[in-house]
Structure formats: C-alpha cells, structure tokens
Image 1 (cartoon, rainbow, N blue to C red):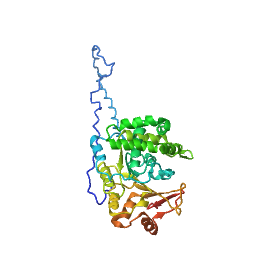
Image 2 (cartoon, helix red, strand yellow):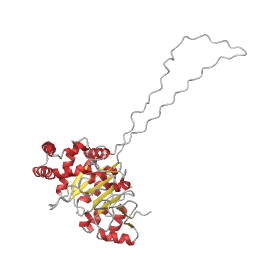
Image 3 (cartoon, rainbow, N blue to C red):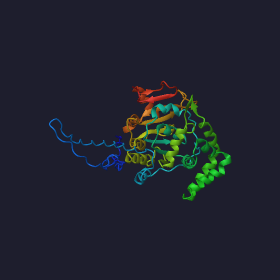
Image 4 (cartoon, rainbow, N blue to C red):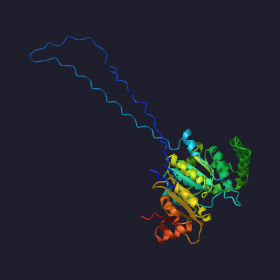
Length: 379
C-alpha cells in the first residue's frame, strides 16, 4: 500500500480491472468421429453359465484448463480517465536563468543501479537526459520530468518528438548533427503545429541553441559503459527502447517545476496517489545545494506517495566526499527516511540533515562502492 503524506487527504485509488474471460469453451463434448451407428445384432442367449454383458458408458473427456488471463501491460497507454488524472494540476512555471544546464556532467549513475533496478512505479526527477538513464534502469511506468529552467523543459519536449521519430539511439544522436538540423526542425515544427506561437518559437529556438552542445554530449553518452555493462540510456538498447515506449504511450509528463514551489510537486503527489502508483525514485541531482527545507518544501516531500522500496537519489559536489567520477558523490536514501527528517521542521537544509544523520549513526559516507554514500540504510 502507498504511504500518503500526512498533509494530504486520502484519495481513492483508480482500480484497473480485467475483463472477464470470454473464451471459455462451454459446448458439450461431441461423440468420437468413428462412433457411427451399426445394425443391431441378435442378443446372445442367456444360459446358466453366461450373462449378456451390459454396455459400459464412455467416460467424458476432461475439459481443458482455462489459460490464466494475460497480465496487463504496465507500459500500455493510459485510459482517458487516467490520462486526465496524470496531466491534472497546476505547475509553478519556469524562470529565466543566466545558465542553462541542457546536459549533465554526472557520469556514474550506474552506481545507483543496485538500488533502483526493476523497481517500477513512478520516477520524479530534475535535469535533462540523465533522468532517462535512471528511469530506464528503474523500469519506470510513469515519468514526471520537472525543472525550474524553461530551457531544460523545452529540451525534454524536443527530445520527446525526436525520440519518437528515432528507432535507435544512433538515429536520435544524428538528429542533433548539423547535417540534419533542417530535417529535425521540420519534425519539430510539425509536432508543434497546434502549439501557440510563443511556445513553438521558444522550442525551435532551444533546438538551434542547444543542438551542437547536445550532439557532443550524446556522443559520450552513447558510448558509456563500465566494463562490459552498457550504463546509459543510449548505450543500452533496452534502456532506450523503454524510454521511447514511455514517450510513445504518453506516460511522461514534462513540467515547468520548482521543487520548492507551491504547485508542481503537489500536483505530482496527487496524480501519483490517485493513480495508485508509488513514486519509487525521487532524483534531486544537486538541487538541494540551492534551497532550504522550507515549510512548503516539507509539504511537497510529505505528499509524495511511496512505499518501502522508494528511494531518494542525490549528488554531492564537495571535495571532502569521495567521488565516483571526477566531480560527484552519489548518495541514496530511503524516501521514508527523507520524509522523517523533514517532518515538523526537524532539519532545514541538506547539510543540517547530514549532521543529524551522522550523529545518529545513520550516515555512511563511504560504502563498498567507491563514491557512493547512504543515509538510513544500515542493516
């Protein structure tokens, strides 16, 4: 069962029912094909020593077992009612920022794979395409992609169009090559035909401004591996296929969103709760460096429906922490632990939480994997 945030009313789950099996064979068994009628013979004479043998009824053949119902596809398109729930709720809106992070400099998301692999459920995350790697490893069934930077939001919208048009990672990569700029812009213009003029203009402008940067970035992402393992959404064909399916089946919601705002995260929590889909991964990147744990933020995190498998993922940029790559420590924490630390204003910032967790013995700054830390996961 999902945990509901203490500050939110309970919402009735929308149950997805299976239709009854209409393929059951209810007809009577037919006689064997060779059981044709023959002329009656004279009955044998009854004597003192013999009796006429009485006919033995033929046993009915056992009915074939009914096959089990086919499991529902967790990535199938949502029903109209569920889609309305998924897309409902206000967002905070983007902000004009001086710097636009249209690519990530985090490279070791694979260090999180043991904690997220196969979790399913919903993914909630900030930033550009690194979200796809984590969500694909998770096997996410829904994605909520949010960012305070409107340009990152436009990058995701452009990715959606170009991913759906590209069967392979290689095709997608080439969509950002200079030689395919005009063809890619034509795809985007067609996809945004019903959008208002401002939205269409900004998204096309974002493609032009970020095209070369993204092309060079994806050139590394498509080759990313650790040993024999393909560790990115473009180097692993199964990961790419998963993200493409989510987009094709409209299971991705791209949102102008502030993690600390009054609308976006509230809308995420309500939608996931109503859809009875636990948020199994909340990916914060290093965003917590830039804000305090305000009352609104506490309410936003409290409202996320999770369960015992749900985790929070963050990256830490600090030379005093062991790094898995040249820049980042990769941390994992159960969502329930994070919610407990924030409840009632117990801590007001990420670093304050680290200090409290260290005093409680709940913080592991080093683990068996270099550059990975944990909170609240000691056995």
